[in-house]
Image (cartoon, rainbow, N blue to C red; front, side):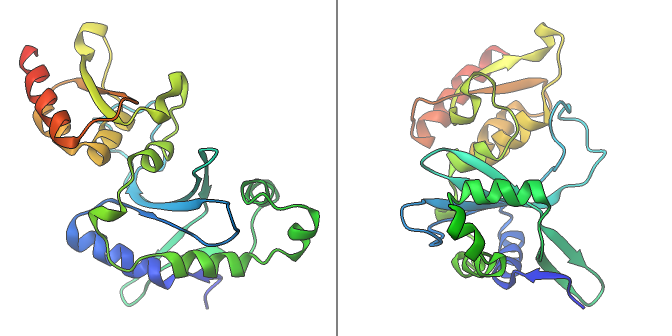
Length: 225
């Protein structure tokens, strides 16, 4: 018997992502509260990624679901449970949240005292699942949301989402991080392609650029390595 709230549309989206070889999608326009401007990101990624070299594949990737608030750039991971057996597969969220996570969710949703008392977790899950597309596509990519789903926050890193330059880690006596590789793979996979197996990181900038310009710059700047 199910112990959580089953997200049926998320299951369909995951199948579509797998068929199209897409590893993340943004769920836009979740109509929970007027002027809240929240969305969600659903991705297939490493849950523990901080301070790991890009060659570390000791842990498998998992499905991750998080909320993002556009006006404040807040990000909140939800405790998604992926269940799979020979004859069954589903995505579920728990019927009850831990005290700390519940407080974080109330703050994220900007609910006051009365609204908190009237809050229904299942209703929120229902609205989230209803807003979830069942087919994956590039129209559901969003670099800013994706960037905020990673733990790095130093030097305003979350808002740096366009290609800037490469960094030779061998010269610094460092290893490219797994986070840098995965962020690049989602924001500009072409950069990972030109890097290949070299110990080179991608540095990003908040300066907006067209993807064609980014690719051209990557082709030029990789030649010095």
